[in-house]
Amino acid sequence: MLLVLVGIITSAAAGMASEARWGERAVAGTGRAFDVLLYGLLPLITFFAVTRLELTAGLGVGLLLAYTELAIVGLVAFQLARRLLHLDDAATGAVVVGSILANTGYLGLPLTAAVLGTDVIPEAITWDLAVSVPMLFVPAFAIGAALGTKAGETPRERVRAFLVRNPPLLALGLALVAPDAWAPEALSDIARYGALALLPVGFFALGVHLRQEAEDGNMRFPPPLTRPVLVILGCRVLLAPALFAAGALTVGALTTVDIPDAYFAQAAMPCGINALIVAHVYGLDLRIAASAVAWSTTAVVTAALVLAAVT
Image 1: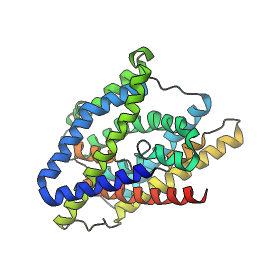
Image 2: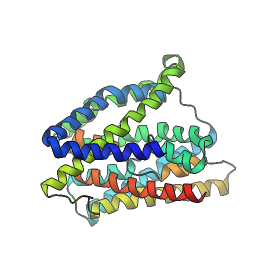
Image 3: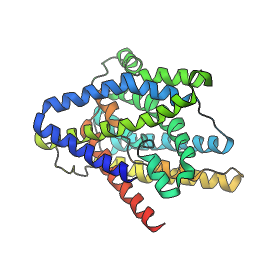
């Protein structure tokens, strides 16, 4: 966990320092890095990590609760963004994507292990692969294609943008039908650990964008808690875990199914750094996405440190 915290702080600081020195060149560099991740690393990680995924009854019920909870969170976020805040399409998309994408991989795994112990890591990995990966490449990318400023004007152009700019979706589809022999266990393990490479890249980009917005006069640093960011915080770190806990308690009262403890922790993870990738690719509001990642990560990491200290 300490290494994760050091990685977050140093990567974000390096991003801010790079933007301060190289300006737009640093911003362009993060865009190219996101493209390399999207079209190169993410499809490989997705295929080799998901192919060997196995589910039990208890795990499966928990995952069903997860998708139900995220669907409700997404609808609530959309209604608040549209009807309460009256945001435009790009900002609305950023609010919804930030609310449904959780950092359950390179942040969720070590934080869950630190709070609950290393024995829960397999269940935490199952959530990450069976929930967070599909949520990124299907709903989140679809929202980006539907509401982003870079996805086209007509419905046909937006559907094409969703498919063409989403190579990990093809990898996910292949992984669900491919036999285990196509993904040797060694490569699957490498793929899971390879996801750790997203942490420094993602938080470096976060630092770059936060620093750029501060210089442009659009954002103070640290970023202010604007109303869209507060909606994401409420949906992501309060509503999402509350809904999952309520569903799990209901299932436990009515059945003998045991929902893994790791699922409760993963449901409370902060806004995923992948929200920046979706915003970059489709033209959602990067300012809102970056602020939500920064504030939600700070809140959850602080809470995890307190829990680890008292347990």
